[in-house]
Length: 158
Image 1: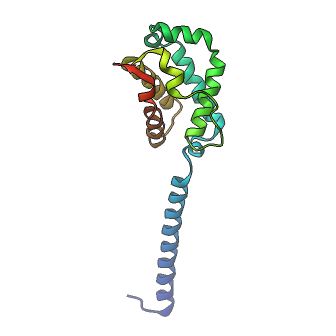
Image 2: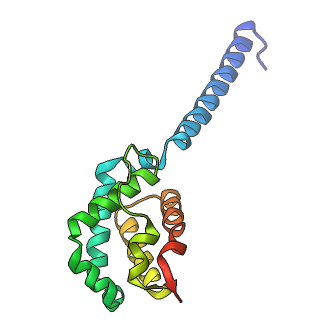
Image 3: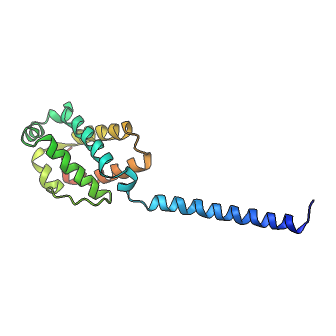
């Protein structure tokens, strides 16, 4: 076994380099987790594309369209306006710079008489869109948790 001073310096340097690289990796991982969900999703444009596709699916969802109150609301509210408000809401709720200016969830859904079955149909479409756009599992869980936090204000019947 070599025991020269240069070998010892090389071992120490290699150890320091490994320690520095390990620290840099940990710092990079911490920086990644410190990013807001909004930033991890890519900001306004990717969010608006996902919302656009999601709302388009909801508009043709047979389970939702069977509810006369939802069907009537769709005829009153232009799809573009709904997409704008939902994008604004997602942007705000994920830590982005937007400020949601629409009505509260309870107020905007109370008259729609939404059931658990309709809620589940909406969630199925939401997850499908997230999967189709390749949203990572961690971000999907966070987005679904945000959506689930509104359920008590939206679902009024089992």
